[in-house]
Image (cartoon, rainbow, N blue to C red; front, side):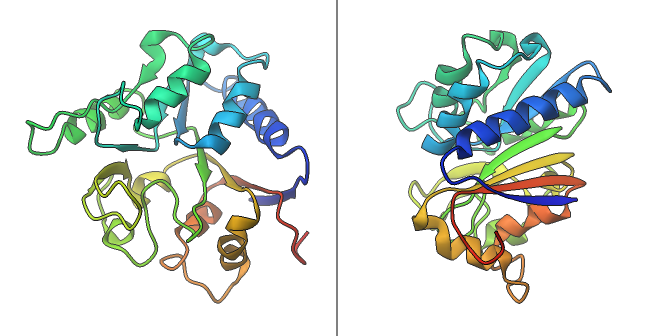
Length: 228
């Protein structure tokens, strides 16, 4: 099931509401919610609203969708921004950053895989924000990151977008998620949004289309089109 929602002025409020409702729904079925989060200004705007919602935060665990290969306190770290936004409500032990270690052959990607397996091996809710080319996380169009068949996470050492080196959920791991929430914010994302809507554009050309394959997904945009 996919729902496309057009919210011209209240896109962040709508996204926050859907995440809250999704968290509370999942907590009726299980004891913890595993939330996958990317970085970015749009995501930060949502999280600043989300932390004000009535949620049993002690049952929410935050994992990364993608991360730059930098220390967690780096100005370039996605995790640093997420913790900055949610530290008032999420317990320290419920944050699960990717701890980059340049001295290990996989930079500790295997350790992160073991960690998510300890929490059920999938994200209950994954929040995504499309790039201008239709990429999500660090899964890029017609790029090795899309065609990588790893079960959980991937290393990207030739990202089309700086910085070149990143980690990310894999295509296959994303497809294990229960609920996907995808953002297209601002006219700069219009081309990507139109690619997403175009039935002749393949998923490899627009990785954002992966969310269509999830059991439940929401596309939230402030871009007007004939679809809305």
